[in-house]
Image (cartoon, rainbow, N blue to C red; front, side):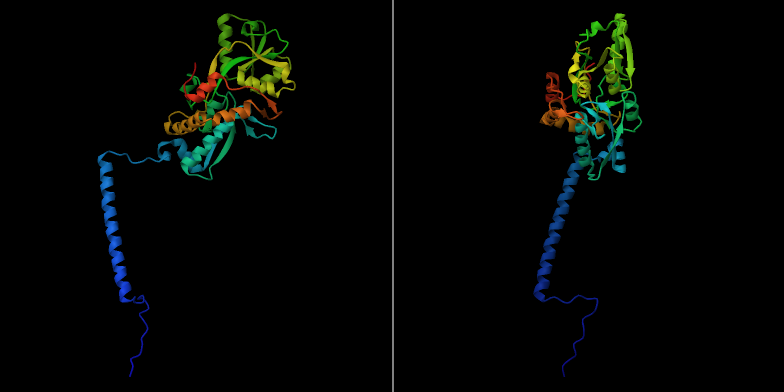
Amino acid sequence: MSCPKFPQHPHRPPRRPAGARAAARRLGLALGLRLATGLVLWGAIGAGALAAGTPTPVKPTEASETLRRIAETGTIHLGHRESSVPFSYYDQRRQVVGYSHDLMLKVVEAIRQELKLPALTHKLVPVTSQNRIPLVQNGTVDIECGSTSNTSARQKQVAFSTSIFVVSTRLLVHRDSPIKDFADLSGKRVVVTAGTTSERLLRTWVEGRGQRVQLVSARDHNDAFKALEAGQVDAFMLDDALLYGERAKAARPDDWVITGTPMSSETYGCMLRRDDPVFKALVDRTLTQLLTSGEALRIHARWFQKPIPPKNVNLNWPPSKALLELYRQPSDRALD
């Protein structure tokens, strides 16, 4: 009588043929040998690295307070200007645009990649000449790229990135004005934007020469130019690039001319908080690549040599020799 066939144990897998079991044993031995060899090699490499004193990699967020906060919140706060044409300003749709703003967005993209945060968002924070430094210092703004001159005095309060532009301080006057240079300002009314280096320079110049000049301070560049257009002042002193931008916004741009021997040459940089060298290094590395690769020159052409909003006026201002030299040899050095 044949024996009944009992079902296999419910918790035991079906037995494989003898040939298959032998092949599995051979494969297991091979894999075990490879794993053991790999562990030995890895241990040797690790021991060698430790013996050589190789430092353990430090995450950017562990070395940078700014990057840590950005990573934790998923947000970076960008300081921008409202009327610094063509660097950072509102267009006709109240969107922030401009040369400096374009560069700042490139920096944001580099930070997104560094932190591996595809969903990193940016919050735009409007700043003025008067409050931009305090807002960087107190953490309201992580980086400000507008039209801020890098000076030795300001370096004691904030850090500056690699410079992004070179300017000279001059005068904007009506084309029929007798004012051709700073020496012609005696007895005249001159408007400056409060909190700018132009305000400080002009006050020092007036006091040093005993000139009888009436200084008028405006809240921002737009208000200063409105005072000039309205005939409330005779001249507007500011960085030449910004004066070209104000001229472009005028109802009749050809009625206004930029004149005068430059009182100073200055560089613009992005402001950062002090004592965060890791964050500054990332920003500097990104800007340096943009300047030396030709990308910054293309961005310059967009804002200085083509029609720009809000009135599609072309500033027709090619890069100066000083700016081209900055593109070739980037630096964060103040010129004063």
